[in-house]
Image (cartoon, rainbow, N blue to C red):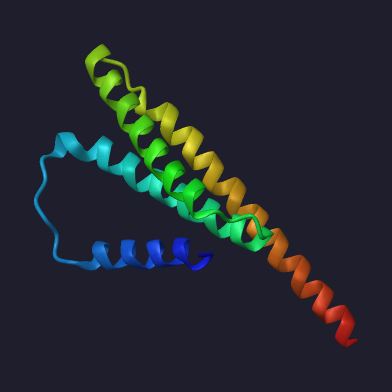
Length: 119
């Protein structure tokens, strides 16, 4: 099931390229957080797959919980008049960059090890 995050990323790109659907602009914080939560789950799933620790139940539950929590923070912030969605953006964005850096480090290490074996 390691291919599941990659499939999710491919579906997300396909949806992005479909003709645009008009949505009210007040949904923008919610949709941006949903996209960021999805990206966080996908990149985390790819990292877990590379490390051999991928579990589809953890992937799905993480996606749902991250999305709901981020939307709840945005909604609560709207009710309080405070931009709480920025907390979710910082947390999820930080995790995306952390996971990408670990994936990059893993791939560079594997490439370096293969290169040393060939030489």
